[in-house]
Image (cartoon, rainbow, N blue to C red; front, side, top):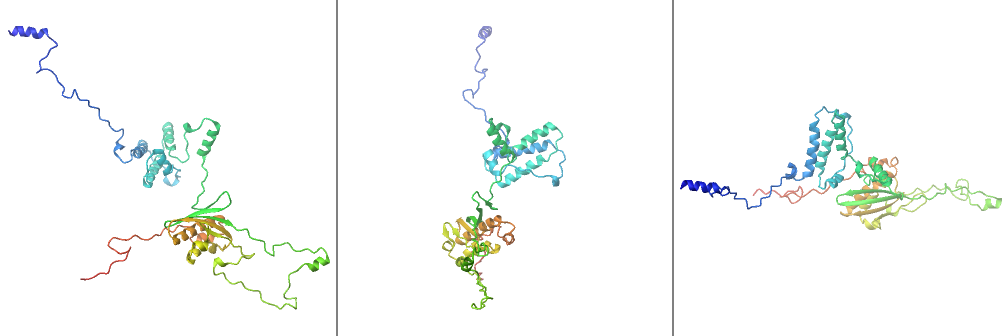
Length: 355
């Protein structure tokens, strides 16, 4: 009997018993492979930034040669933070940008003996230099190529409102800040009228013309006119009431399209705006147009003072040295101190009670 069963088993080679059949319990399930991140920086907050930082650090690690003297090294101009943020598509804090620039400086200090490797490192660092344009981005036509090359060679200096500059209309322009207020100033010199001494002398063509021509009266030689002392001008107390004479030009000061006295009601605020002209001894020699916003009246007045001082100083640096020496070109960063918890004010404390 066993021999017959053995023969039947050999007759059916493709059939297997259930006890010996191989089975896969997960054969009917569709399991997808796990997607692994490309880099370990995937788990950080800014993968692109840390990948870039790691690549720069690897360059410095691959060339452990002695570095030159740091005193003889002149740091190159790197890509500004705003441009780097636009290129990477992420936000970079000033501290992170400073760290990146420091690493780039370490790599650029390396003295690499291999010329080919040194050229590769230089090409990698060029993308972080200010004003660098890659050859692939240059337009094919001559006009586009010239424009891109000029932009890459050297960018034109932008007008810096913090220091003051002269616009295309000949006006000196600057801006200033104080607390929450921000002011823009345009300063224009006043055309001074010619005085009596600057006029051409009167020439008499005949005796009659000589008689008709009125010559200045000499007080000492004319007996009919008594000798009188020359009048002494009174000192100017209020700048808003200065008389318009030929010797003293009077410039206008407009704040947001309104006269100075109409916009700033307090005299201290008006004096604050005009203080740079008093320091430079140029009261009334300029027309001033101010545009101010934000903050209170006192903050706006001090912001206008800073903007006017910067524009006035840039109009003539040598003549307006007292403006710089008086400290009128620096921003006043003082602000109200915050209130502390458990105190009624910033520093005031409650009265201590023993019981």
